[in-house]
Length: 256
Image (cartoon, rainbow, N blue to C red; front, side, top):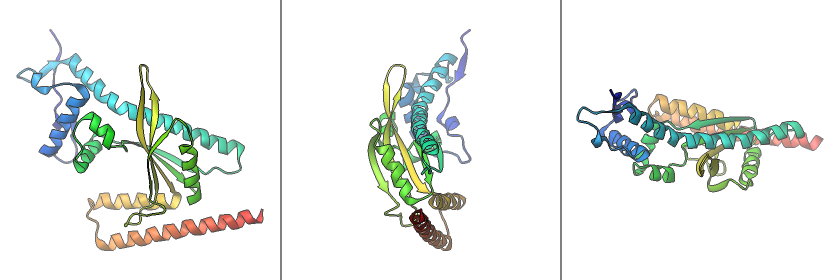
């Protein structure tokens, strides 16, 4: 007897705290078919398909995510090399902390919906370029630009986009330097150029952004006006602190 299993539905894939809308389900179905080449209408009337087919479909979906994970691995290795070089051969390292993030399928679906991206793999790869993310925290604003310059100088990284929210903060006060780069991922039979978003910010900027994210999540993005005003004031304070710390560093260096 051939092992069989029910075809995984979009509803099961999208299981979360809230029930997915019909539009969400359509996006899931479109992406699932694009990733796997599987047409659910080809299943038996009872929805049963061979277990091996299910396993193959799961592998194809996992492969979509893996290329982004590998790109993060490649990029973090580059950053770790720079960090270790500075720690061993210089008196000072501009890199304080490094964190990585790989968007979940739920997050990808939400962005497909929000941006009006077609629910197929090629469109998602082309338009959603922050599925893989690396955040670098530095002590000073100048260090953020310095590290960015070092990464952009590496010949195998291609810079696709630069958004400077340090020089030009968002209206809510958000500050960070964003780079979108392609990272070569060397697989067994091919090389993929995978986009990764790099965020560079100071410790003060990172603290503010973390708090802002928690507040917007708690209020489901409907934040009371008074809190928004306080967040904006806090962003100004963080910017002033960065400037003051930079001046103090310059004064200390002048004494050497």
